[in-house]
Length: 399
Figure 1 (tube, rainbow, N blue to C red):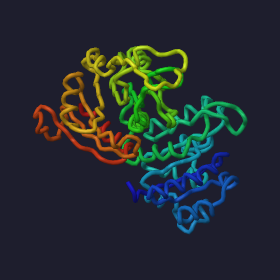
Figure 2 (figure 1 turned 60 degrees about the vertical axis):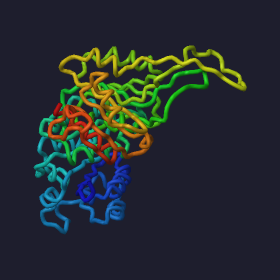
Figure 3 (figure 1 turned 45 degrees about the horizontal axis):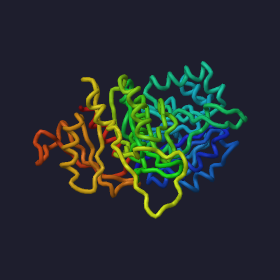
Figure 4 (figure 1 turned 180 degrees about the horizontal axis):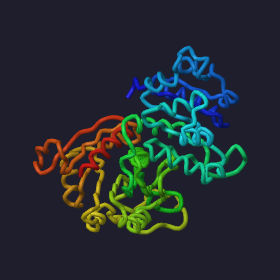
């Protein structure tokens, strides 16, 4: 995805300083970046910050620019226009066709979708007029990255906080290639490792990082799906813009959370590394160190298999199979045994990494059949987990 052209437009909010780091991250992705700063943005940041990082001139005015028609040439140049932070003022101008400076004129002249990153006081963000303006922009095909919730510059806790730049980057990666094409689709997704307690300090778990599950959650939500994430032990930030995120430490808790929610979902994606066994009894006090410790283990409930029994005709059930060897045959067996619509086999050597290799198997349109089972089609996908997540979604849409 390197070589893309991003027009970063900065309006005059207190979080404007954070876009200096955003410009840096965009450049590190291998994208060419040009910047537009409004007059109010210049009260918070200076052009030299951005020109030094992007190695391009910064545009601040319709009339002092070396280009006689910058609002046209910059729109034509860009693969994606990003307005960050997007203040209530610039959102109102964009929604209502006001063109009284370079940025607002660019937005009126723009004939392609724009990504807006709203950031403002919570009362401003939730006001009727701002929400109406955001809705107008959405209806015209633009993208809105929901602001985060936290302590705002005014000292009030609430929604309206500028999001982490990593999340802005994920949004840009998405909207360079995809639209919000999953509107109305409800997805239940499990991710991360479960923990089965031995005593208050010790437990049985596994090395799953939850990265693949979080990548799928992000990609789904950014493309418009309503995502309910049921997650276990994950030492990473959970995307803040999901419909619901429920932490479940044990397999029993995860099963309970899944079963109470699955019926209303369209897609059921089981990416969590659920423990296969748990101690028959959990000791209430910390066990003293001994020469030997014998634990009696019993099987945990198989969440994926239970969903395979319960799923409705209009639901799609997707499972994952992490193996060290014999990946394809193990996945085939699991596909039939648990009544799946799709299974993704992956090698445990990729646990914790940002990249992965998925062997996706099922009744896939346009893919060759497996030698091991001609009734199943298969495709091998390699690369960054976030990009793999988008590729997997494209396959799910065709099921």
